[in-house]
Image (cartoon, rainbow, N blue to C red; front, side, top):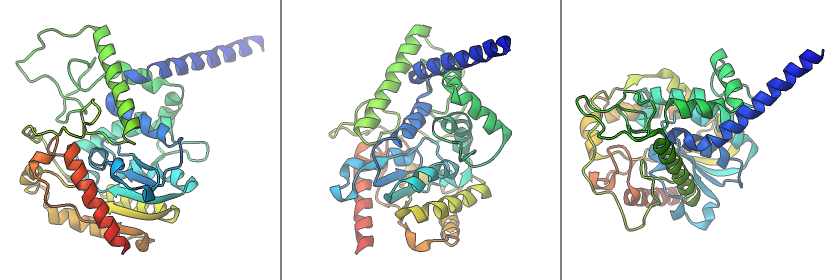
Length: 361
């Protein structure tokens, strides 16, 4: 009996030590994972009257500071690489709180199987699931695999932070322990063949850099109510915008059918509708460069048709308003082919607010 109690005590002590270590290592995570963690923590704060959901396009495309006082507390909860399965994980919050307006970006990247979807699976299964959901009353986010359940057990004691710190400290070769090959900044891409770092930073320098980066993200998201110009680790300046030439689109761009995404969108809208005043479904614009390439692979008419099929299967159609994307957004108002810059976000946010006001008339 004494041996059993000693073993139990050691297990509890070990879990507490690991949990404490995980808390200390929170600033040494991949920056994308830091954003997911901070989003989850934000839900424990003051009640939110206007919530913005979607992927990084939403995070860098809608500015809460431009909403008027009638909108109440406005928080941009955009998540890197978010898919409709991630949005479903917000349902417990909506069930327990009174959210007046839910603004949701439905991007082509959330309707089809792309590299963005592959990245989302990594965050969803190993990171975000641990910091907010599941709970004792809700065992899974969107699925019931044994892998998710086991991952949650380990994540709950802080191992997910320890693991991510060891696995991949940052998004570029100057900070990363391990840089996985891939086409997207933030998802990981290696040094071009034939090129090498002149001087690789020391481990201590890498850790200092990633900690500084994540602390900057935390400060930015807190001061802007969740808005962040993607991949800029500085406080947004009202007078500065990105005017450089857009980075080229990834050569491996693909859009494959993903019927489960359509179903997840329908599930989210149907589950959320009874608990909010209204849902404003939007499509944040892409750059002209994006359309010049992607429209050849994925025609805009196809995207519109798939969205209309979702809208045609709603339990509460009167709760959902679908607003079209803005057309007059040149390359000069984008940080890259996918994300609006600070001034582009201002232009789109004002455009959106005008559309929403017209809907009320």
